Image 1 (cartoon, rainbow, N blue to C red):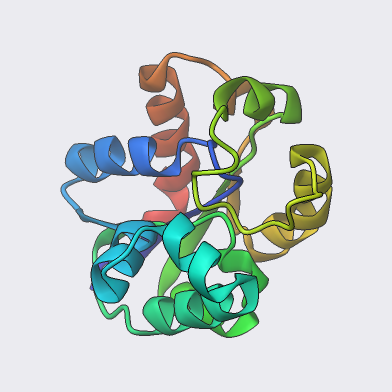
Image 2: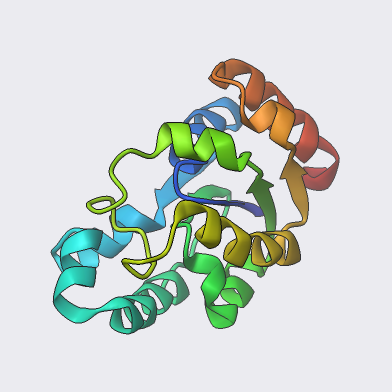
Length: 172
């Protein structure tokens, strides 16, 4: 049975983009937990946060992640999935977790829609504060990492090649 590959990292790291390309390249399925969340809750991430608040969002996200049952699938998580130990424990069962480590300066260049993207953070928090809060969790749950110098390249092909090199010995 083939293991899942779980991509974790900050919003804007490229988890969904890399995930689709990686899944096609290695013949796996693809699942995006943010899209699954929207489908199950019949709303966007930001609308849910606005209506119910961050705590309810995190509970709903945890439930969505815990409902996932698949094999041989690349799973792109929402950036906040690492805030739930239960969700991460569930995802890590028979999976390889890969942290896409994007430098903070690159994230600031990529994310222009902080208020509408559905990012789990208090209104007064900066992207730098969010990065500092989550970085230890991404490292804690990572089995492998795509390092900053490769994660920050704008060439998705190079990032894909690094992901495959990183995964090769873990998937055999």
